[in-house]
Image 1: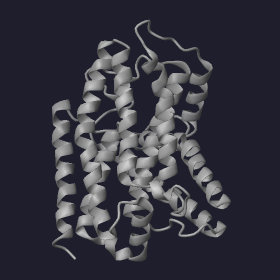
Image 2 (image 1 turned 45 degrees about the vertical axis):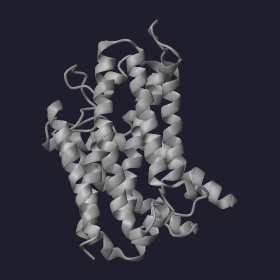
Image 3 (image 1 turned 45 degrees about the horizontal axis):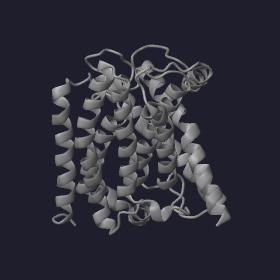
Image 4 (image 1 turned 120 degrees about the vertical axis):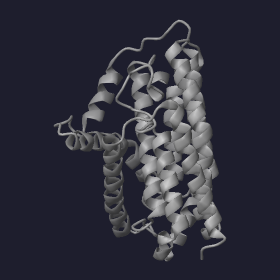
Amino acid sequence: MLVEVIIEFVQTLAVALGAPLLVGFVRKMKARLQGRRGAPVVQPYRDLRKWLAKDVVLSENTSWIFRFTPYLLVATMLLSALIVPVLTTHTPLGFMGNIIVLMYLFLLGTFFLALAGLDAGSAFGGMGSSRAMAIAALAEPTVMIAIFAIALRAGTTRLDHIIVHYSADGLLVLNPGHLLAFVAFFIVALAETGRLPVDNPATHLELTMIHEAMVLEYSGRYLALIEWAAAMKLFLFLTLLANLFFPWGVAPSLAPAALVVALVVLVAKLSVLATGVALLETALAKLRLFRVPELLSGSFLMALLAVVSFFFVA
C-alpha cells in the first residue's frame, strides 16, 4: 500500500512538473515549423516564477470567487492527476478512475473560471465566459461518448481497466470505432485546452479571445496558478489520448523497471502528440466563432458513430 501511495505521488509530481515543459515543447515546435528560433523549452517555468514574484492587482468589483478560482483550478487538476493512469494502472485511487468523475472535475474548473470572468465585471471577461460555456456544452458530451465507445468493449468505465483490457489485445486499437473515438477525442481536447483552431492561446485580440478573456483581469500569483492549471489540463488530456487509445507501455505492475519503461514510453507518446498539435496549429488558422459549433458537432457525430460501430463491427 505504501508503494502505491508513493507511485501515486510520483505520477502527480510528473504531471505538475512536466506540464509547463510540455507547453514549452509545443511552443518550441511551432516556432521551428514557422521558421523562428522561439523561446527556450523551459520558458514556461520562467514565466511562472516571474508571475509568482509579482504583486496581485484586484478590481474593487471582485468577490471571493475571483480569489478562490485559481486555487480551485490547481486543486482539480492535481486531483485529476491522481485519477488518470499516467505511468501505471496500479494506484490506490484506481476505484475513483471513472471517466464521469474526471469530466465533472474538468467541468467544475471551467464553471468557476467562467464565474471568475463574470465576477471581474469587465466586458472581455463576460464575453470569454459565455463563449467558454457554449464550447463546454458541446465538448463535454463528446468526451463522454468517445470514452464510452472504447469502454463498451472493455465492459467498464474505469480508466485503469480500459487500459488493461486494450493492452491485452493490441489489435483492438485498429478497430474503426476506436480510431473514430480517437479523432473525436483529439478534436475535443483541442477545444477543452484552448488550442487552435478553436482558440488561440497566443493572442489577446478581443474578437478571438476565449480563455484569455476570462483570465485577463488576473495578475501575480493568481495568473501563475491559472496558467499552471491550464498546462496540467493539456498534459492530462494528451495523457488520456496516449494511454487510453494507445495503451502500450503503461506499467501493469509496480516493478521499478516497468515504471521506468512506462515513463520513457509516455515521454515518447506525448512528444508525438505535442508535435501533432504544433503541426495543426501551424497549418490551420483559427476558426470563426460561429464555425466552432460545426467542428464540435462533427466530433460529436464521430464519437456517436464509434459507439454505433460497437454493435456492427466485431
